[in-house]
Length: 280
Image (cartoon, rainbow, N blue to C red; front, side):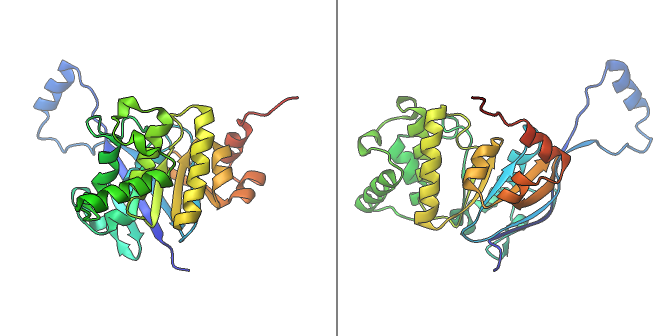
């Protein structure tokens, strides 16, 4: 089977600008003729390669600072890569500048659900307007009645009552805002939905409901998922395969049960050892 997403040798580096004292800045001015030292960089993503197949859910785990969110933003073309390739649906989308990617047809087929449903919604947009925006911009649905019907269908799909569509984000609960974000992301029936810790900002009781919703949507719409989380139990529940990320690299990957039952890398074993256990 041909991969839906194939990432090879992906890198994303950020320059580090060290703070200088006045004496250091004067020395820099005096020695301007000397060859400049190579700039220091933070290797947030450092040579990552993986594949994701149609209909598959791949979990990406790692502690905070391991590079997961940066990898997600590069793959979804919100950030430009430093090096490497990103093939999606047979097209190298890594060569398209991030600022231009939103205007390509691939944008509709590759969508992202953000970590914090509050921060990811425009505070001036009602729930209706938030869901309708991708339909207008990318789906070219502009006729009023068709747009209204489609938004209400999407709200029903994610379990959001229609009477809430006229509310602003601050008038919605965390779970309701999460449903708006999911409805917006699936509005155009994307082939791949990237979920960047979509339940981490929610209460535990609401997390379970949203996770069940995501599992149902994957089956009903036939989407593939790249599911990012620091919660290994959630990844084990939803994913077919798992990638373990540490210091910008993928240090282990494989079927979920294999990685969880027989971890090979010391970092993976440390993550699993840190899981809470129930004592009766």
